[in-house]
Image 1 (cartoon, helix red, strand yellow):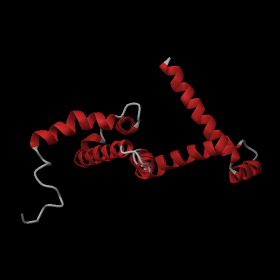
Image 2 (image 1 turned 30 degrees about the vertical axis):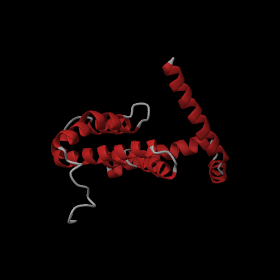
Image 3 (image 1 turned 120 degrees about the vertical axis):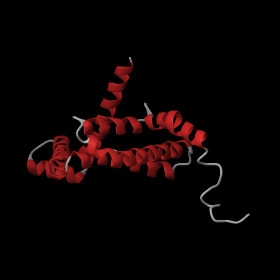
Image 4 (image 1 turned 180 degrees about the vertical axis):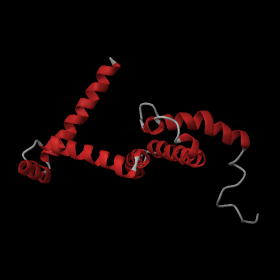
Length: 166
């Protein structure tokens, strides 16, 4: 049953996106001039941009864009919302993303030789950001928070109190 609801959600989202594309005047005009369906035009354009980015700039850039653009959008929405939970969720994502990027910087020479590394990286980044899996929070609670608590990195002084005299 869960698979059916997941497929239904995808169909619903696809229908919403298709409706938005069909309502866009510019897309309708260009699609009419070219003689194709507006949804096919936008879908083909999307595929072209993804493949162009992949072949010209490399899979690393494409992978980083996937892990960056939606979280930025969701973070901006979270900042503007009144809820605190979404702020915390995206702040945790960015902390884990930063840690992953730092580790990757020092291990990239080895990691890039692993077959399908970027596919695994995209999967990992998507897992971190998906609300149904919330991988970033899991890593935070199971790895980072115990490490910080054990080593008492925080709690002794705050960045604002550094350099102040008591």
